[in-house]
Image (cartoon, rainbow, N blue to C red):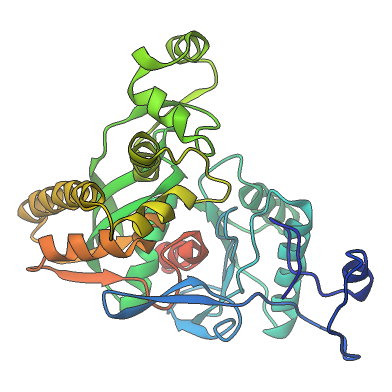
Length: 364
């Protein structure tokens, strides 16, 4: 085991590991490049990578580009990609950049990739979120070396990652997750696009709900946002006066709402914890199946309407919510007459968006 503290990168230094004061299985060969274990599961009879690291990185993903691209990825499940014109080489899973040690490892791994592949970018691409550490690092890197910088909206990058995998020129993109900065400044997470000739049109999204910041960890706050009459006075005042609030179309928050109101699952001590508990409860509870049925029926209806407008019959399902086996299977049942594509070479979660970022700017 890596024995790392929660949220911090893998420990590979003898001095650091000895601080735990426990017996350690030790070898006298120094570790040059630490790398986490990969995590893979089978969904809809196909492998899905949850964490792409040992055994996968830095295996290339084919991607033709006009320039050498550095794609920074995002802040959660951080992973970057370098593209040499023929292939994209993704870093292993690094972690969440809000931890200083994780960000230090991110920068260290980036320099190692530059050296290993004799690479230096001609263009940089990052997430649209202005507060992301990876975005700010990209901005500084761009200024320091005089390189052009492009910013790509989070959910468009999710969809484009699957388009890159399957070499799709057009598709209907369904991107459901917990959070991503939108083109309108709101927090997106329940989006349906059409994509043709690299043009993304947002056809539909789940209705915006006003949330209090911090509700990502406390599902009771999510429930209060949907039922403010039942909220404590201080919460109602904050919502009414727009104190520390934001609007979001997130499907991830709908998972939290359902988990709290039906099972009392209140806290996400890690991202997606409540969603994971809901999936585990499905075999015992019909109301869980009903919940996923409703989401899949809404999704199928909107995809069919988008098809009638565009004539596109390729559908990409991506974003962290599509790590849920039941959601995928239900939506596939409702969209049986479409060609369905789900990430296989890179994660559907934020660990894959660097590939999508590179795909979107590949012809610049």
